[in-house]
Length: 371
Image (cartoon, rainbow, N blue to C red):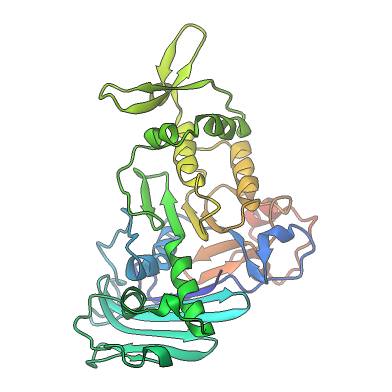
């Protein structure tokens, strides 16, 4: 799981910002939201332009760097903070925990595609060290000591290079196994947003797939009906062909058959997108959804959070909806507030002890957690 993330000089983050998912409390309720001492289900709140989306894009920079699953949502018109010097680098620091083992990846970039340095630590041991001012990088895995470590370009990650071009996946030592665990985790990270047209990063290289066609051809129609029914949307769905002869969905009424898109609300269409990814929920390691309930009624939002809490993957959501800020769903160390001073859990945003009986939404609105 992702335990801690830091980023410096990225978009609206001029100084270092730390997102600490490992700073948990001893609350005795909603224990499913924390796993191995790490927040496993998190919701981030913040005003408009506070950096919620930019924090998510920063976290997913590792996906674009270490995998082929870049998706279509990376927005890098401005990569570095505009108030800093143009020569400043952007620094990303990731700390993961895999079965009590620490894996830390640190990289600096001058832009989205250009690496300045990379370091990989496994259980505090420096495994890979890359400095673009040097012509080689170091790799401290004895079985790979004869590997060609020449740096031919700064436009690729040496972590990805080692993973793709060595036999590290076949090695049996603990360091190699944790290296591979990291890469498989990053490959199974997924970010998506329903606010813009099917924006996503990670998990898949497919960028223009018909959602309805996938549901039909995967024989998921009945499952999708049940998914909608969970959210109190009871429709009889059938498969038809659209004007181009491609499989699509329709709703069957007593006297009519109407294409799903024609009668679906914004909330229903958002749920279609969620279901498209939810089909693979058992494979996803870290699921991140920006403005997850922008088109949902409060009750639907609550049901959606409950559904994700039951999943095994680590989840990070952003929202403006304070109706889901409640101890009945999650706990104060799993709700985060982001502003110009950084990001912190509600548990750490006040000196007052928060108890299970507290109405989090009410005290949030009253200013308990303001700085």
